[in-house]
Length: 96
Image (cartoon, rainbow, N blue to C red; front, side):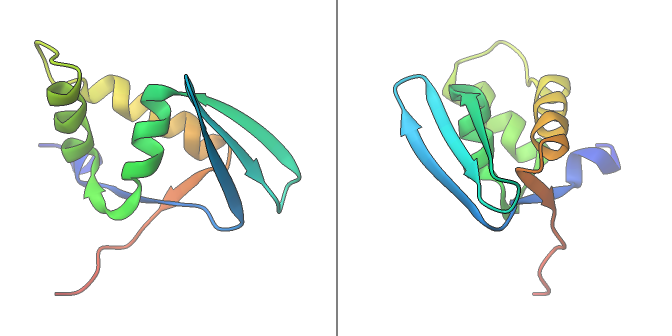
């Protein structure tokens, strides 16, 4: 497992999200910007709680969508997009 798949993310602060039939609409109050994200991105956005690793998120999607493979590269790409839009940020692992 690469270091990238052990990364943790959390939702950025000052966001308001609302569920739609095909995803989420996320309002970034700090930037006064609205984002529409599809259902897969919305699932990943919800999983960004500072505890789920990239690998765990990819495994969740594999099971949820009954995929024949773990979509690690796709998850990494989606998380990179969410991060570039300011919707998520890196999180530090909590001390046990």
